[in-house]
Amino acid sequence: MFVIELVYKVPLTMIDAHMADHVAFLNEQYAAGTFLVSGRKIPRDGGIILAVGDNRTAIEAVMAQDPFVARGLADVRVIEFRASQRADDIQQRLEKTDPARSVRRRR
Image (cartoon, rainbow, N blue to C red):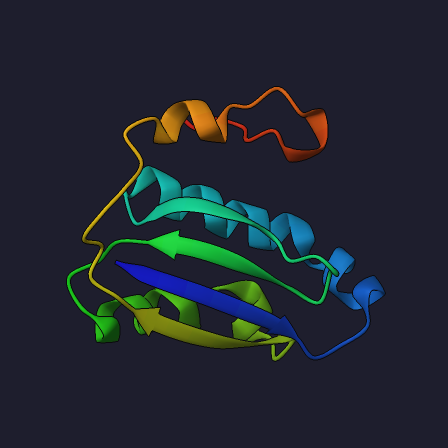
């Protein structure tokens, strides 16, 4: 399993100008089964993605395709870890009703 951190290198106006391409990339990776969860960091200076993949090299290759990374708008850091525990009620925790923290489910 991997934690991926994106750190913006440019003003948010430039990030926002490329956001549609980035979201399309995210959607492709969700459909491919690579990405599990993603979202903006707070404060908004980048993003976090939880992913699964065969190895670090494969995830780095995927992330090189992210428009933010490919266009030099963000640096990427890939952290590999072995998930050894999880909450039994993980789905319910992700779906808590606080609108500011709601998680949109991908199907």
